[in-house]
Image (cartoon, rainbow, N blue to C red; front, side, top):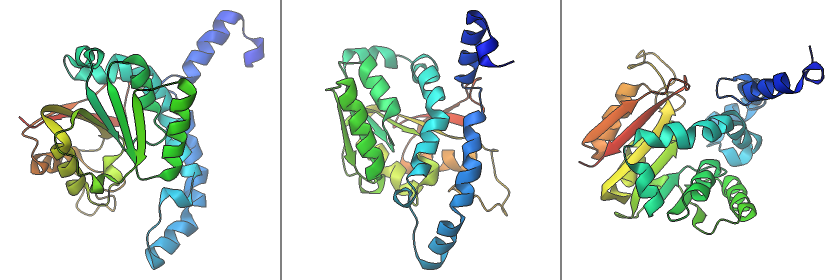
Length: 250
């Protein structure tokens, strides 16, 4: 049966399932993308680094795949992990999304909480260009985007909330990135990290390391080394791919 053959009620239900966070169809695009990246990856190992700027379609893929998750879960499921955060955001706080990509999550927050100020950093010029275009189209005046690598983040006690969504596991120097994030938080600030869900500890012979995948034990250890003395690990029933870490200085 095709969509055209469905009555209005069934068609609406079908559309909802297609946009659901449980729909994994969007991830099939990675099959072709990984194949097309083979030569670039091989050349990178031989001659130097390889980044998203050399493969712009790979920047869109995570947005396409995780977009329904952000839209459906950010406000109702993810942010409420931090008790009282909704009240603070409505009152007005400083928020940073490090590794914001095309700014989808940050724009949604800026729309919902106009009293708060939002900043998005990403090392991808392509991603930041897209984020600025989205903010402009939405008429947002409480948001700012800039090209910046978190390894170069030198701000001190500026933000009440710092978020990273699927961004830390790909850092060349995750320890340095987390140290910079900790320093940029206000003394009573909160760091909310969503990152790949993996076994507590990976096999020592695993080729994944802390790049494409890391175990929660390593993530918790790096957070502690960065100076976060209180860390909570959360899971969401509708998100089988990620863990959510809530970290505080004290």
